[in-house]
Image (cartoon, rainbow, N blue to C red; front, side, top):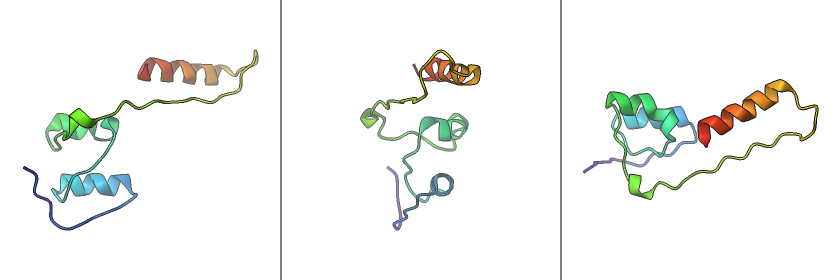
Length: 82
């Protein structure tokens, strides 16, 4: 059981993470934001059965003259999130 006292709300992701680390509530965060905290046991995942897949869209100009750095970024994103 998780005991939560009071109500807190913020649009600052780092503040929400700090509150969760301090035991002040439950935080909805992306895995990569709290990966180190999960691995170290500072935070525990909750409600994992309700996690929905997230899609990612990359918008970039098409054409023969696409800068190499843009192509490298797109390839990296595909490799990382596919």
